[in-house]
Image 1 (cartoon, rainbow over the protein chains, first blue to last red):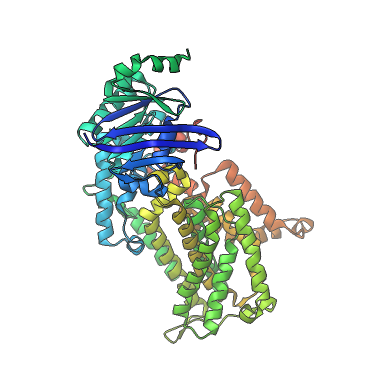
Image 2: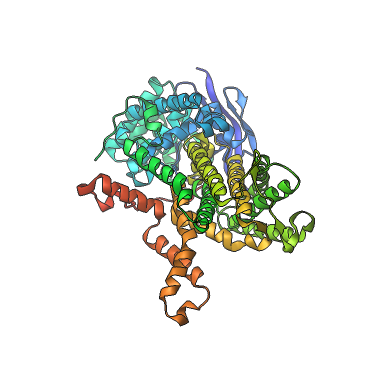
Length: 253
Length: 358
C-alpha cells in the first residue's frame, strides 16, 4: 500500500491552547479510514489543517509526496482533495444542479470572454460539466431534486447534495465530516452503501470523521481514535473499540 | 402546466426555452425599437434615463445580488465613468473609444475599492464604500483642472462615424443598445462559471474555498466588473445630463441604486431592471399624487423620500424576494392556473445555522 496522505508530527495551537499536539497519521490509497473520538478531540481541526483552513505550527503534511502545509487554501481542491462539512455548507440560494456544477469549478469553465459571448466551445464545456453532474445525480438518486433550491430541501437530502458536490470535483481523497449526523437509520444505510461504492467503483480514498459506530464498523477498513489532540489507538474497528485507552477516553474513567 | 422534454443538455441552456417567451420578448424589443416613432422628445429622454439606470442597477446587482457585497458608494462609480468619459472626449477621443475607456477607468477604481472587501464585509464594507464616495465627491469638487470643480463641465456632443448622436432619438437608441448588450453579457456571465463562483462566494466562503474558488480574487473581481458596468452607465449619463457637476452624484443616487436592487429582488438581473423602472418612475408618480392631495400636504417637502422609504418597507415586509419574486409567482399562477398553490414559494424555516469558519 502506498501512502496518499501523510501527517508528520503536526502541531496546531490557538495561542496557548494546543488543539493538536504532535499528530502523525497516514492514509493509504484506496482505503476507508474512520476517525473517531470524543468531542473536542481535534478531529475536525485535523481535517481543517489538511484543507488549509488552519495553518499548522509545526510538522509536515504530504499529499502524494508533496508538502501542502503552506499551500494557499484554494489550491487544495485542485490537487484532488474534496471535503464535506459538519454543519452543511451548501450554496443555499442556488439549485441542486448549480451546487453540483460549482463542484466542477476546478476543471475550469472557459475564458471570461468566452463566457460573455457563450461561444460554441463554452457550450460544449458546460455540457461536459453537466454530464458529469448528471452522473453524480444518478449515483446518489438526486434526480427528484435536480432543479430544487437547496434552501427548501429536507436535512437528509442536503447532506447527500453536499456529498454529491464533493464527488463532482472528482477527488482522489474525500473527507467526510460526520456524514451520518442527523440522518435517520434508513438514510445512514444508504450512506454506507454509497461510501462502499465510492471506494470500489470510483476508486476514491475516503477519510470520515464519524460518531455512529455501526456505520464505522460497516464501512471502515481502519479506525483511528483521537483524544485531546493526540492519537490514542488505531487498527480494525473491533480492535479500536476494545482498546482500554479508548474506553477510558469515552467513559472518562 | 408545461413539461419540457429535452434530448440534449444544450436545450436546457436556452435563455428563452419556449416559443411563447420568444414571441413576448420579441414583441417587447420591437416595441422598444418603435417607441421613438410615436413618443414625444420629453418621453424619449426619460426612457433613455431609465435605460441608463437599468445598466447601473445591473452593475450593482452583480456585486450585491450575486456576490453578496454591500456598496453604498456606487454613485461614485457613476461619477467616475461620467467624468472620465467627458474628460476623454474633451481631449479629442472619439465617442466609441472614450466610452469603453471610461468603463475601464471605473473598473480600475472598483478594483482598488474591492481590496478592502477581502478583509471586511457587511456593515463595515458599506462604511468603506460610503467613505470612498465622499472622497470621490470631494476630489471631483477640488480637481478643477480636469473636472471643472464645483463650476461643472460641459459634455461634448456624442458622434459616431460623423453622425451626431445628440438628438433624443439617436441617443435613445444608443442607450437601448448598451442596455441590451450589458443585459446579454451579464446573463451569459452569470450562468457560466464566473457567475457560479460569485454565488458560491456569497452563500458560503468556506465551501467556496474547499471547491478551489479563489475567494479573494473573486471578491475583488466582482467589484471591478460591477464598477465597470456602473461606469458605463455613468458615461451615458454624462450625455443625458449634458453638464456635469459634483452634486449630480451624491449619496442619494447611491441609495436609489441600492433601493433598485433590493426592491427588484436580490440575485436576478430581471429584478435589477424592474427595480430601476419602479424607482425611476416613483418621482413621477409622487408628482401625479401631489396634484390630487390637498394644497397643504402637497407643499410639504420630503414627499419623495417618504414614499421611497414606504415602498422599501412594504417590500421588505411583504415581498422579500422583490419584484422578481412577484413576477415568478405571477408566472407560476398563469402556468399552473387552476392548480396554483401559494405555498410553492413559501420558504422553509431552518434552524441549523451555527458558527461558520469564514
